[in-house]
Image (cartoon, rainbow over all chains, first blue to last red; front, side, top):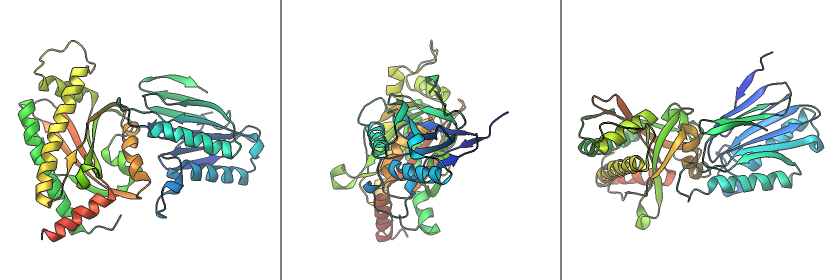
Length: 159
Length: 209
């Protein structure tokens, strides 16, 4: 049976309790945050650009560009579908620096903040593939919780 | 980001076109080839849509990125300039810039990358000088950076600063075509909201609009 695939663009997130594949393409300094309730098999994926929304105060900015708002929204939607916080785990991907000179610390910073925000919420990070100098794409299967990571310049791996 | 009228958008496009024409002249001199450009596409769009506006967000591209600085002794970042081309295009361009006729490998060497950075630097210098004179606004290109990967994953670095400041941004896109070589490159300029305000102020005060 071929599962339906849903593409998550920058600044978007999606939650599903149906078995589907959630996909993010081209994570550079952005971070793909996967949340999964192991018992109910409810999964969520957010493609975030930045760590904290408190960095900005403008109300017309899409809140889901920011990890803190996206994580809150994913958790809220998952719980509404019947997920239980104690069964939820996280896997995170991205936060690289694709420009060969350093000075682009944003990817690193994003990962640090994503980790802090998940820790604050008590969600354990059970896998991560972050940093480095190459772009990543990820495919999150919400029925198994597994995430495949690949990209034109990296080895394909499964987490 | 304030709303922008069609008249203002047209005026900005004209200015960008002037900049692009100057950039194509220097590119032509360096490559020793005739260069044709298209009239710039300009869009006020959500940050999330910028990779799609640039085109082919999931394809591998070579990208030279330069920050654009300006007022306040050049410390104020006004925007970003991206010179984007396919891997094949990058090899072709790097070769003609170095007068290499026969290549042994089809990977970009340090010298190739240097040549690409240099041409981008010179093109943007010429483009920005033309724009600065037109609008009476200080614009200076910063240090060039190189990346080769999926377009979206490169461009997201450049959008991060904007992402916390504004919902939308102004994006200019011009296509450069190198005669004979079936080589296309894109020059993309993304303006920061404060820069756009300044541009429009100067345009109004100089009577252009």
